[in-house]
Length: 258
Image 1 (tube, one colour):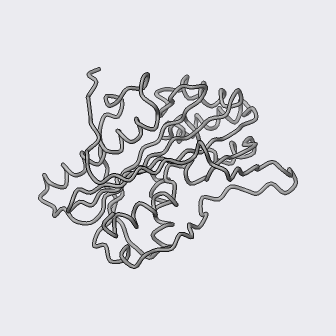
Image 2 (tube, rainbow, N blue to C red):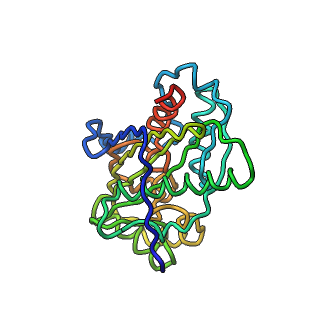
């Protein structure tokens, strides 16, 4: 496989890295009898400047139904509309999975997705205006970067292994003003602790097939997985691939000229 070198654009970049020093630890098993259920619809209460409503076009660059769902929640809460577009790039050919920090990798892939979508817009003679949001996520487990499982054996190994050590999701968001090229970006980290997931549950997850579309095959919101989550340090929407608070912050920054 040919490995592609890709550099992050130089510009007005706001690095907002959070998670490893996250102080708000959610202990989901403090009381087993009253353990709350997962819900991806956590409201993002950050104040919204009027400028976000006035943006003519917001594009979410993803093919993920989970990210679309989370973005729709933001759009409903804060009264904006968005379109979607897919980058269709070979993610495996971009970046160094052995020597680079996972935060650098997800930012690199998010920028690569943005470049591919901008090329598509340009090639179809669409006006470059509004904001483009792209995302990427990897799972880090036992010091190794895990991406989408390539086959059944890898998916089984990923899922079964989560009982041995906590897994962290590393999620990048890049927001670009298409007219000016100015960019805001950030990384959010969440860490999940598991008890062993039964083999029959893993069999069902494999059969359903959704795990192949998730970094690390990680689906903490799934009814077969949720009961085995013992603690979540961070936000569920971050684990699902679109940290809503960070996304809204970057959209607001971009809408107000960074």
